Length: 354
Image 1 (cartoon, rainbow, N blue to C red):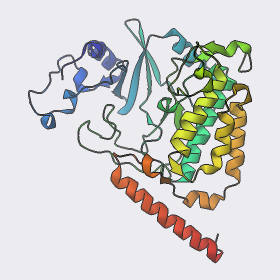
Image 2 (cartoon, helix red, strand yellow):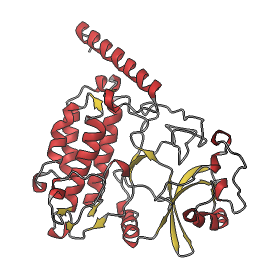
Image 3 (cartoon, helix red, strand yellow):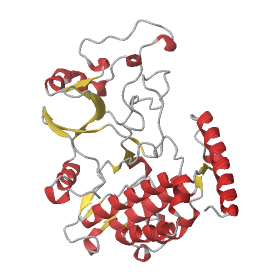
Image 4 (cartoon, rainbow, N blue to C red):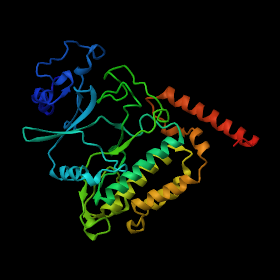
């Protein structure tokens, strides 16, 4: 496939990025030409479409100094830059800062390019243990609490904007366009378990709809108008006229519904004990919802009641209608392991060993 007009920016600036220490894929070299083949199975990885439609401002590269796979993002939004600059201030440096790290900043032809870690969707591959799920949820709630304490509302705190650092989980890395492959064609990824490479770090990304409220999360100035985010179910958006919403409370609902409920409780068996948390985060009345600090405290309270030994050994099972179809063999293996481990736990409990 030929270079598209929206990819031309990366081709034009290939050499400048190379001088800055970042090498794009061969497709974006100014002298690259597509293979002269008729059949897709004979094509090279670079012959296929290189960037997601609508996301041409994102591209991956290799950092020459250490051969690290990184993500490049060009920014034209002043609002997003202001939010990211706020999150990069010294006072924002905290272990609970779960916003995507900025590794470098480049200026090319009046366009700002931020260099970030090459991240992967937070729930792909699937979780295998209950402890893996709980660690992901803990970091997500820590990140939400951190942003709100720093007077930042994300306004799209949904599944598509939560990623993980999979560098230890998938040591060979993966293709940006075909993330189930390593070469962009047919060589499938091989991954380790989150438990084996723990801890895995999770991050919030994409601050296009985010905003800073100097008066804080309890100010009336955090009320906004319109509809935002991937989640279309917030009760605030059910009004036939242009709705208004409390930005921080919307974040709470989005994480509670789109992430905790849909990605965890409805996806895996064995997490039902978190239902009270989800209920308090998704109350129909926004003023009845708990804030991020209360959500994290309630989560820790619910988790503290679990037995640590059982938690480490406890495999979880994806619900049949939620199993990811592009990992059929692994999904069956996960179900067998879960069935065996739960059987062993029941036997040990009956014998008084646990």
